[in-house]
Image (cartoon, rainbow, N blue to C red; front, side, top):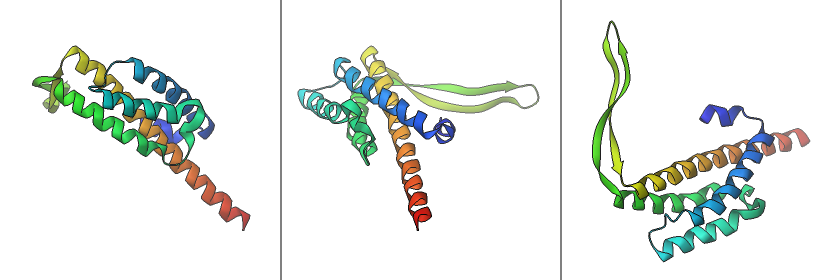
Length: 146
């Protein structure tokens, strides 16, 4: 995922971010994943801030972190338990190669929250990459102007 955003042309990355921000700001409020009225208000304020192209200003990636914290707390509430899953592949010479990882068992609502949480993490990552690339471009332009 990281490599894709690093190699994507900056204009395409910004367009993808704007599209995802608009879709996320609209969908987040209608997804019914907030645990309380306060959480819904926090999400509504964030959505209003990023709607209409306001999401490409410096530091907007940091505004997603409180939303992620709210969703993480909700996921913790919706966790039924944990199970261990093998992630890897069988090797004829070595035997099974991989790791055993612990996975959450979530309720149906918890799964919806997880999807939104993962999507917002991806969006935050895209914003961080775009901010870093734009900062680097500005630094190069300043240096070239001297």
